[in-house]
Length: 331
Length: 144
Ligand code: SF4
Ligand code: SF4
Ligand code: FES
Image 1 (cartoon, rainbow over the protein chains, first blue to last red):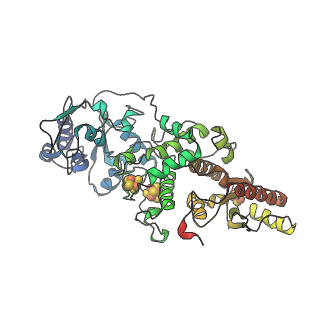
Image 2: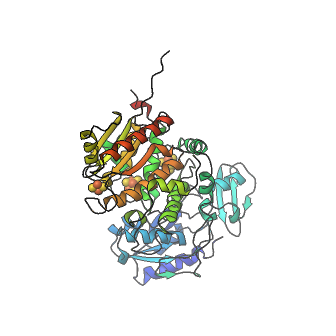
Image 3: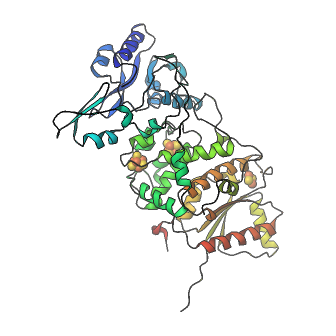
């Protein structure tokens, strides 16, 4: 269960709407099912009472939506941000993707978000309804009664390895200030690094071959905000289409991860939305880990105006060959 | 039976001001290096974006080497410093995906280093030759 209630969010938003601080509210509402909670823009209190959702399935990071929404909005937009979302928020500001003056950011504490696949592993398929209280109660079209589970047993991978409960940007914070956590987010990258190249190749071949190029990972990514993406270039030969072979699979994923290297805040949205459950965050984390080790610790989005490692250099940086040697040899 | 000798196809991206001139000098000095090294001239090493490297492999390269001016000598002041970081990260990622790390290389070669250019290419060709054909980043549609 989340610490701050849905009602408290609505109350906060309603009062800011009423006193004219903001003219609209970016939050979440139910999608097709109880578990696909999607971003939504509200302009009135009644609407919010009817539709706004805040529960254990609000994994969606709202910061990227500010890019499009602030362009159209007349007044300020209130946006609710979990701690991880605030990093993306700062990163977007660093890249001048929206006008800070047009946003009123409210930080909300987060107790982690649920992974629907883990939920289904307990409840079974065919989910009819989900209720989030002390426990998560899930009923399916096949079952009598509801399956109950603890949020902590079904957390998204990114929440299990949450890097920070601290909000790094807000105008107002609901609840208490959290802390930067000592997460073990690079463990899985290290496990892969310790493998032989053949094993790594087999691992990625299998994972990436599942990709259907739905582009969900790119579209949801708060770092991928290019108005015209390389993968939409008709001359590229790979414009919005399914990969025809493993070369195209690898190319898409290498390029996507490279384009966000140094700018990726590790918000984990890519892996959350992938319908094929490809662990995309591992590619991003590999870049983050390498950059930390070679160019000094760097957390994208920690503050506004930072200079990312790949748009910077020092005179005595490691050579490409030395970067390999640093990790020991698994060749 | 005669086994056809494997001759790796190497793509060498060379910046116009140093490495390409270095290659030129290697030619003038009649320094030997395999004809299967295909040079692509660029204004600066930092013109290379990751797509170039992948495309080279797609189109049949067995190894890709990127050459630029010595650090400090880039004709656009700092281009090769950015290249150094980018390629270090990209090549490390290729390695992470299980693609042989010996297939990629960055080397700084000045315009005066014709002999170094030839030696670098000979060494790189030998390394890639020992690895065999590029299978892990190939695109069968591009095979002739
Ligand atoms: S979300 Fe998954 S299936 Fe879709 S393009 Fe990205 S990796 Fe491929
Ligand atoms: S994949 Fe690259 S070009 Fe496309 S939106 Fe992301 S960062 Fe931009
Ligand atoms: S001009 Fe040679 S590396 Fe920049």
